[in-house]
Image (cartoon, rainbow, N blue to C red):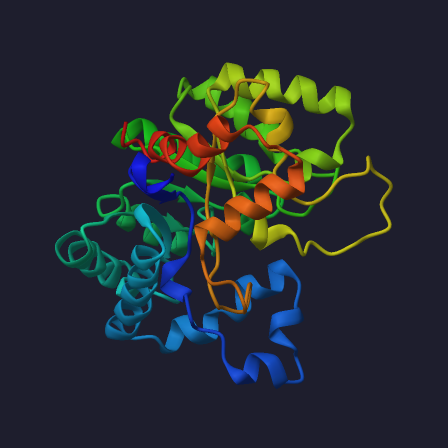
Length: 316
C-alpha cells in the first residue's frame, strides 16, 4: 500500500550517528545508554570528536541503504555542525546526498543539528556556516536552556533571510512545565512564517490539560505549524512523579489530525546511545504510532507515512 503512494517518507532522523553505539556504552560505569537526554547531548561528543569525514560517510550511507531496503524514498537527517563535529559530518552528508540520488534513487535532504545551541558566539558561527549547505534549518531550543526564545528567533531570522524551511525540536521532556510548542507557534506568527515551520516531537503536549491542548491546536493551526512524530524514540520516556492527565509519551496525533494539523513520521535515532536497538524501520514507527494513539483512520495514516512527509520537507 505504501509503495503505491511513492514509498515511505522519513521526515526526521540522525543518520550521522547511526550505528555509533558501542559495547562500552552498555558497560561503562557512566552507563551512557541510561543517561538523561541532556547528558546524552554531551556524551555524543566522544564519537563526534573522533569521527573523520569518511567515518561519517560510512554511517550515513549505511543508514540510507537500510532505509532504501525498507521502502523509504525520501528522507531528512539532522547533521551535527558545531565546534566538535566541525564540517566533517556536513561534508560527508553532502557526499551521501549524491550517493543516495545516484545509487539508491532516493531523495535525501539535510538539516543542521544545533546541539551546542546558536546563542553562543562560536556555536552561532558554525550554525551560520552551515546555512548555505543545508536544505532545511534545524534547531534545538533546549540546547540554549534559559534562552529558548532567543534560539528560536535566530532560527526564524535565518529562515526569513534564506527562504528555507525550519524544523525545530520542541517539548521533549513529557512535562506540563514545557510550553515550547506554544512559544514556537507565537514566534512563527510574529515572523510571518506561517506554513514554513515544523515542530519535531511535541511530546509534552499530551501532559497538559485538555483545555490547554485544544487552545494550542488552534494556535498551531493559525501558525500553519506542522509536526513530525517519532514514536519509538519516545515511548520509553522516563516516569516521574508529576501529576498530569493520563497519557503516553507519543505525539497526540489522535487530537492533532482532527484539529486540522499536518503530522508526518520520522525514525529519529538509529542504533546510537539515544536508541541503541532502534533500526529505523518506518513500518514499525507507523505501527507504534497508530497503536499508541488508538488512531486507526487508514487514509490519514497513509498520508502521515507519505504525502505529509513530503509537505513538511517542502517537496510538494
